[in-house]
View 1 (cartoon, rainbow, N blue to C red):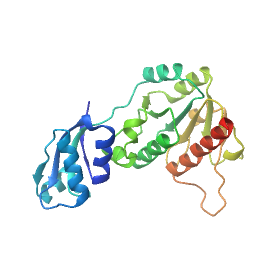
View 2: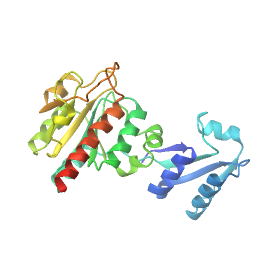
View 3: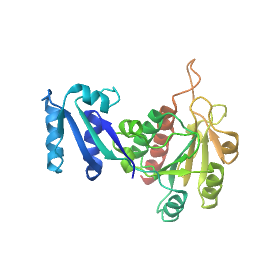
View 4: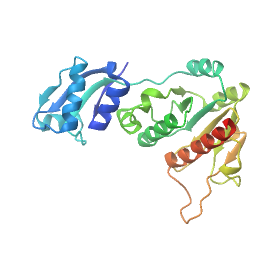
Length: 249
């Protein structure tokens, strides 16, 4: 397991809530006594971890001069799962599958935001590429606010091959592409499926797009021609939630 440093009250609280057993060490600002920091220290003490009281300059160094809000922890990072893990998960699924596939997404902020939305919408797992893409980093964990610990992240070496395998398992492959005429609101999200979203600014790669059974677009009614990747992903996943809840009713 790789370990790294997380900082900031929100990130530390998420770690305390979702993976307290992975926290190894903590440092706090000796000059701060605000309520949220005192509570975080109390929670750490309950785990048997006594934070080291240090000055702000040391915290700045530990947090690479980012806004740490007076606290830094060392924690085991959640790891990416393998293609073999993905196959086991798909084969053991009950109910219609919903996977999010990110094609060469390089911005850790976008990956973190997608993980947070994936958790909120009940996605069974997020599939990412091994090359030319971000993996799970401290920034991803910070943005994900705990979702990096709750949503399985599968890292694959050949995305086109993985999509072909998913189709063989009965999943419908839906790609997000701004140039297509079909609206997301006219597509069927109730089928077992993998939703594929492309990299920032470039969209889906050609080989990825060729594996999609259908391409859909989010309607753009203004002058801006595209949405941020994680925002578009949220729109798509919540349409899946809306349709699937309607079927249950």
